[in-house]
Length: 82
View (cartoon, rainbow, N blue to C red):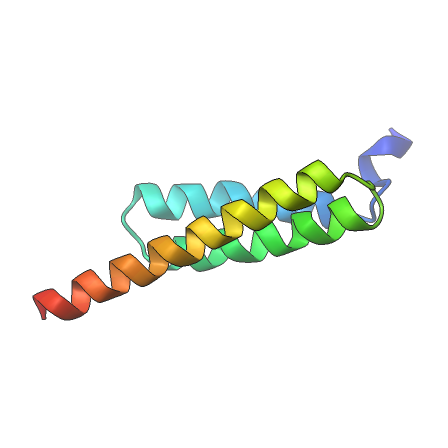
């Protein structure tokens, strides 16, 4: 039970934001990209500090860049269609 809050709940918040971001994108809500990017930043922080996992940090950096690219493309597409 003590392992549930080893990282002061930051991991739970990051996980919740990841799931919420995926849900929002599934509903075609462009802000899902932003929610996902925030969760990626949290996972990068956790990977570099408390979890000391460089692989997790690098993976989430790549995911964050992909999310930002997706947001940019979606925004450009909406501007072109307007």
